[in-house]
Image 1: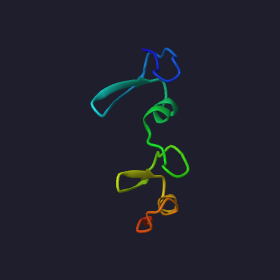
Image 2: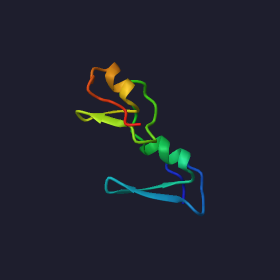
Image 3: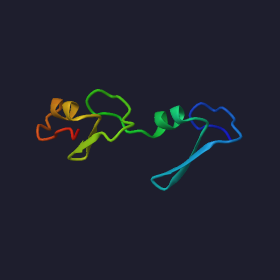
Image 4: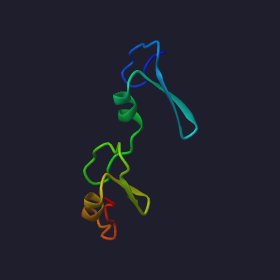
Amino acid sequence: MNCEVCGNYYDKPLIIEYQGREHAFDCFECAINKLAPQCANCGVSIIGHGTEAHGVMCCCAHCAREIGYGEVQDRI
């Protein structure tokens, strides 16, 4: 099966069902590139918990505060 990001053929693809669609990748890097949400402030791929404020995804509370969501706090 071919990776939908890089096109590489791989006989043991990573198959991920996400939002009702099935995706095939040759590695986690490609899966993250395609499926991970992006921080609304800095643009980084959110591969951890991240945070959401009013439907906006951010990688951390700092970035959420930077775009005006002052009530968001990290839980560490």
